[in-house]
Image (spheres, rainbow, N blue to C red):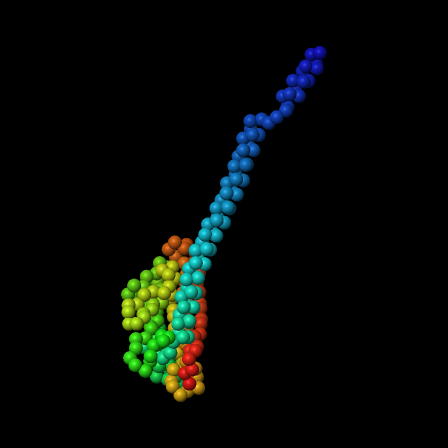
Length: 210
């Protein structure tokens, strides 16, 4: 009888978990949860940064598309202002690249006096051009002789921009066109991640300029 009671008590003592085992299990569970939550927060943060950077790049692409669309519909291309070099081109051409380009907007009677639309690349701090990243500048636009205003967002830092203009001379066999090259950095400010970009676009005048 005594032996039977002793055996039952011994078995009852061996069942369940000890306090040390419980503490070790809780500690391991806490470590795993901290690692998982940290990874989840990192993914959420990376996703927000990617979305913000995509928004900035979309702004730049929309600005460039707007420029190209307006230039295609315009006439009287002029890249002679600030032209670095012009080899074999007409008086308003610029084969070596310029940072200022103007044209007559669509619907303007160019046989009389008119005010052109002007695109210009300026450094940060010039007029109302501000950037929140790098020491670059922005793309500016002036319409009807009005003030210049930036086309790009403050998170876009344009470090280089050139307009290559050809075919502006009347009577030649080249249709007027302008090649636009843009380089810079997107990001900064509220967008912690940054990336460099190099873009190029060509705008061919729709109206015959032969």
